[in-house]
Length: 248
Image (cartoon, rainbow, N blue to C red; front, side):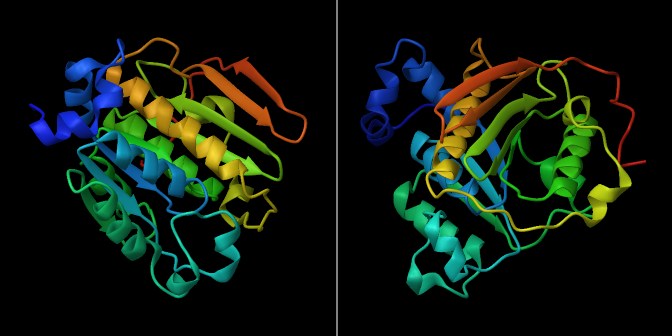
């Protein structure tokens, strides 16, 4: 999909990169991405993917802005408390980049809607804080043949990986499912800057997937500790758990 003259000006700092050029920016424009979660991780993911010129972004979240979100969820301010996050995010992202089409889903990802919604997108971003949701994302992506970019945060530590990419490992290869996950729900503390770091890394992985670059975090788990400034990468091996699924 050719870029307009205005788009070429807007994305100039991408286009002059040897690894992107106009052809790469056109690929970014042609891509659709679903972001599941519009909170701490979702905020930087949405900002940077929209600014990067992704052609179509879906936002899925069933929550409203609360005052405790404002310490780390940079899409929102005090005036937004009580408003659905997808409503605020849609308005702000359209203002940021009118060339990106935004589709809001004011709902929670579930067995009933996951396959239908995810099937409409090329890449899925995990910006959830819910273990069960990650298995839903994983299993839907495996069934539909979609890659998904995983991120998680807790206190001063974060993780990033890419699953189901080019026949690589899935989320179940890293974390085996158990029934207790269904009932796990506990608010965890997190330093405010951490979602920005991890979410930005996730957005960067999505761009690398679009551009088919080497070094995508498939088969690898990046762990970061910003209290001690450590960044470590571990290998993830396939364990043949593709047949295990919430979708029978």
